[in-house]
Image (cartoon, rainbow, N blue to C red):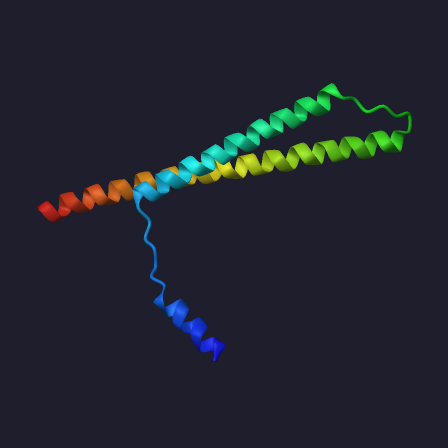
Length: 109
C-alpha cells in the first residue's frame, strides 16, 4: 500500500529542464558561497597565524600543526569546489543561451 503511493508520487513529478536564467542564478549562489568560504578560510588562517602553539612537547606541536593544516585545507577545498561549480554553471548557461539563439536562427531560415 505504501509502495503504490510512493510510485504514484514519483510518476507525477515532472522533469525540470535547465535554462540560462536558472544556471546564472545557481552560479551566483554558488559563487557567493565560494566567496564566503574563502573569506572564512582567510579568517581562520589569520587567526591560527596570530596565535602560536605554546608547548614544549614536540608531539603536541606536530598534532596541533596537522589539525590546523587540515582545518584550513578542508575550508579551502570547499571554497574551491563552490568556485568550480559556479564556473561550470556559468559555462552551461552560456552554452544553453547559444543553443537557444542558434535554434531560433535555424527555425527562421
